Length: 118
Length: 152
Figure (cartoon, rainbow over the protein chains, first blue to last red):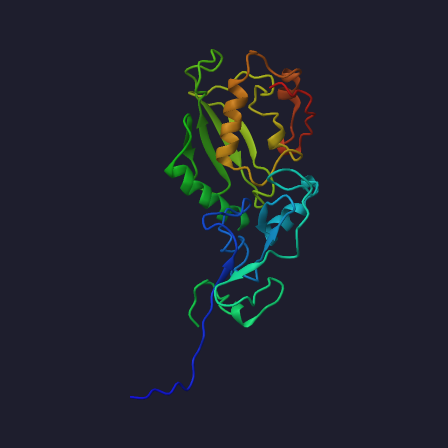
């Protein structure tokens, strides 16, 4: 028997390059989940890594840094919070497409489930 | 929204497991909780006593600190401490605007207060307690405390 493949759909999943059991210190949601205000994880609700090596959901750390009382310090170590890059880099299970700053095809399952099958 | 999500997570954890000497008394909503704390060592100032804490959360918790005070009830007195006024208001930097950090939580505040008490040896009220208690009309979060004492 001969099988001709007419079409195939590739599905890729990606997640933040963070330990599995770690949560954002501000909202206590997992890094792979969203901050308390967002619905969709991934590029919609990215992580921010500080030079002090502490990371948070970007929305969480911004709402803290916006407060005058924060004195722009990291909530964990109270050093001045400076982000390492604009966003943390995602690791890609399939290909090295996700550089964290660009939406690529691999990022499509950003619809609530990280392992969504399109 | 922000506060309720975070608080529901904290509540699940508090209902599951708590450090020694800390118990959850009341958490019927996401505005006010009550916790009981005991000092775990033999400090004679606090031995055999239980203290009730009242936590009030704003919508922006944990970006904003909760308001935490000791609550006098028939079974729970206000502990003696040079930073605790006799109306239950607590002068502690981590509860103030300047000292708060959103990584703190209800449990860590309880632990900090336990250790604040256990390290104290003075059966004292803060200076000016009587006047403060009589005339203060401000909410704890609006009082500007001056943190001068690094000993306790």
